[in-house]
Amino acid sequence: MNKIILIACLIFTAAAFPQDKRYFDTPMGGGGGYIPGWYFHNLEPLNQKLNMIGVPALSEKGFYSSGGAGFLYLMFVPNLRIGGMGFGGTGSSEAPKGNDNSQMGALYSFGGGGLTIEYTLPFIKTIGVSAGMILGGAYQNVEVYRNNGNFNWDDLWNNFQQDPAASGYGRIMENNYWILSPTLNIDIPFYRFFIFRIGGGYNFSLGNDWTVENDKELAGVPSDLNGDGFFIQSGIFIGFFSF
Image (spheres, rainbow, N blue to C red):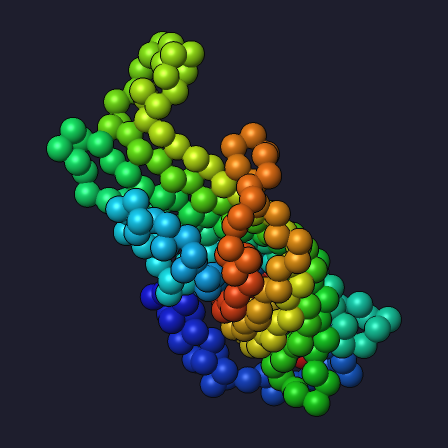
C-alpha cells in the first residue's frame, strides 16, 4: 500500500508541470510499463471455514498485485486506444505451531489479464482521462495445508501408497472465470516519453468454475466466493504520448 501512495504522490507532483504545447489534434502514441495495484475480493465465505479449522482469516482489506500493461492509439479512430494488461498477487495465513511442530495454513493467489479498450475524453487536454473496459480471464487459487514440515523424497511416495495423510494434508482449489471490467484511468505525461497513471475499476466475473485437485468439479461453493471486486492501480509507462 505504501508503494501505491508513493506513486500517487509522484503523479500529483508531475501534474504541477503540465505540458504547454500540443502538436496533434487528437491523442496519439503508445507505450507500456509496470502497473502495481490493489485488489479487493470478498473472502468472507472462505474465512469462515478457515476460522472453523483454526486458521486465521485472510485479509479482507485487499491484496497487492503487480503486472504490466501497454496500449497504442488507433489513429484512424480518434481518441480510441487498444492494448493489454496482466496482473497477479498472493496472500497467506498461518496458525501457531502445535506441540508436535505441526503447522496449518492457507495460501491465496489470484491473477489474470486481457484486452483493454479505452476512449480518451477529447474535452480534457494535457492529460489523458480514459474510460474503458478489460475483456479477459482470471483465476483464484486457494491452498489449505497441515503438516509438520518434515518431508523425505522416498517417504513421500511410500506414504502415498499406504496413507497419504502421513506426510501431511493439503487441498488445492481453483476458480477460473472470465472478467468484464469497466475502468477509468488518468495518465499524466512527463516530457512526452513517460506517463504516470492512476485509476481503477471493477471486475465482474462470469462463469465462475471452482475445481479441486486434478481438475475435478467442486460443488457447493458459496456463490459470493467469486472474482467480483473493485481494484485500484497506478503505473509508470515508457513510450511516446501526446494528449
